[in-house]
Length: 190
Image 1 (spheres, rainbow, N blue to C red):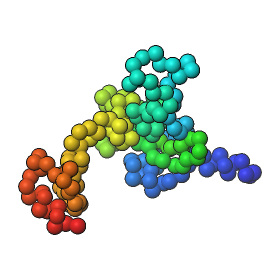
Image 2: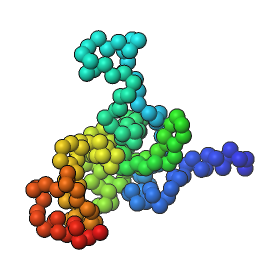
Image 3: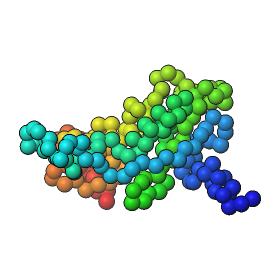
Image 4: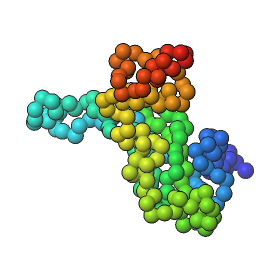
């Protein structure tokens, strides 16, 4: 066999088997691995010659950032391209100056091996159709709007304390919303 035959074999297999298995991949029928690239960086506001014709608060053209992350956008593209499959999860593979490469774990919800297995039956339910487009995957939940606003740091500190990870509270994060014994635990655990 020539070299290109081996390259085809490489493209058929996932690049990081352990990572894929941690995120839910199983070497059985009904599971598919997709490799997708997305263009890195933001995008300019599509206005002629940078003229937005509005108030100065809306004059921004260049430094705009999209609300969703690149993995979340790529999951949406994978879900639209493979409409019959459900996106289970995704992970980073590599990146260059222009593109970011990601691998996706897709499940066929109509495959009998998936429908008959009690561990994977949940994804066959109608409520999980196109979960990648509604911010229900791991990448989508990060830009879903959870813990992004005011006082979100206090919630993260409280969560870290519950999980047993000690953190030093600064005066900005120390509020009266947390129980008083949290502050003592936080100072003791370093």
